[in-house]
Structures are given as C-alpha cells and as structure tokens.
Image 1 (cartoon, rainbow, N blue to C red):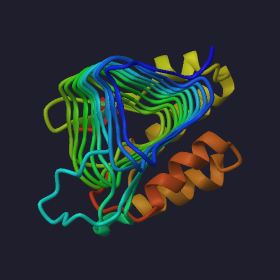
Image 2 (cartoon, rainbow, N blue to C red):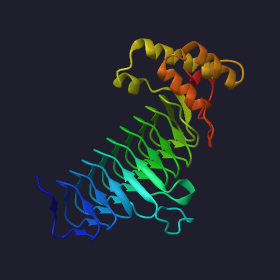
Image 3 (spheres, rainbow, N blue to C red):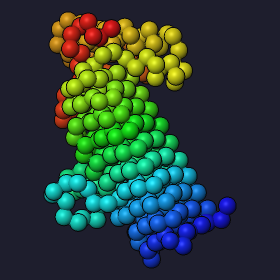
Image 4 (tube, rainbow, N blue to C red):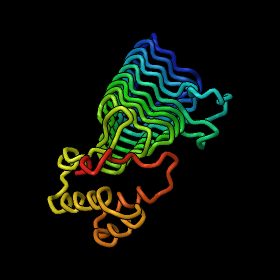
Length: 268
C-alpha cells in the first residue's frame, strides 16, 4: 500500500513520513514529527513536538501524542518523545515528551497496547509488550519494565518503578515500587503475591515457579533485616535469572520504596 494522506489532514512542512504511512481524515502532524514505515493514524489524531513514532504503530482517533508535558516547570525546552514499533495507541490516549528534570526524553518501547484514555506522563520509560488498560495513568518519571500490565483506572505515582511482568489491578493507587512478577492492587496498593496468571501465559516452567514462590516467601515472610533476606535468597536461588531479577530490583536505589504485603498472610 502506498503512502496515503487524506485531503483534510494537515502535515506540516518538515515532517517526515516513511513508506506506506497512512494519515487519516482531520489528523495533524507537526513539522518535527517522524512517522516510521507503515504507521497508521486514524482520523482526528494529533502528533506534535519532537516526536518519533516507530514502524507499524497504529494510533486511533483523538489521541494526543507529543504535546507539551503537564508540568508547570516546563518552559518550552526542546525535549523529545520516542515511540517504538508496532504499538497500538487507542482513542484519547495522551503521551507527553520529557522535561529538563528527567533527561528531556519520554521513551516507549515496542508492541505495547495503550487502551482508551491511558496517559503516559513526561520522562516516563515504558518497555516492550506492556498493557495499559482503559484510563490507566503513569505520573512523571515512572519506569515500566517489559511485559507489565496496568489495570483500568489505576494510577502510578511519580518516580515509581514497575518491574517486568508485574500486574497492577484496576482502580489501584500505586505509590511504591512493584517487584518483577509481583501482583498489587487496592487503594494505596499492597503486594498480594506473584502474578501467576502472567507467569503461566509467558510459559514459565514449574521448577522456576517453585523457586519464585519459595524466594518470595523467604523475602517477605522471613525474619531479619531485608538486606540479610536478599543475601540469603541470592545465595540459595541466585542462579535463577528470574529470582535474580527480583533481588536486583529490590536492592536497587529507589525514590519511592517498595510496595509490600500488608501482612505475612498476603505474601503467599
């Protein structure tokens, strides 16, 4: 299919469009935007600012991509937004570029699904294969690792980290870091266990899941300071890359602290 721009669309001078790009009715593409090969903008999409959209990404009506961040400190600096390949960006999604306080870049990886009304704020980093359900929100400077799922109407506080293949339940307010493969939900979300459904869907073998379960209990139900529990789990299960990923995540510096179980009974 050849490149196609609807007569009612506006593509400003300076914009670059790859092969087979389709720009639908009443779209607006800014002069510093790059759309990769095979991108599709359905009707009434606006892509602004210094924004690059990777090949095969599809953006649906009334999405606002690349407009200035919702940060009162932003003063027009030349920050950027980078969106990878084969993403699906549904209706009314908003994704903002970076600010000077966060490295001037917002980055979205490949093959993510942003459902209706999802919001990715300035300076956030979203990995690959993530899902943000309807009206889910990332505050500024949030890091979402590969394969994470954020439920509908959930809100993730600024500077929070969400680990790989973690699951955040709908309507949750997440104010602390979510460990890889963890499952959290609730008003001021607490850690309720591991994301077993997601792990099974990813093809995780039984032996690995057993090691994850044992290490989780040792980390969150065990006795002694957390640094000693991390050392113990690392010594016993450190050869397992998935357990190692949890240990590495928990040991890393954090602006928000860790999302923890309410009690040992929630950690199973």
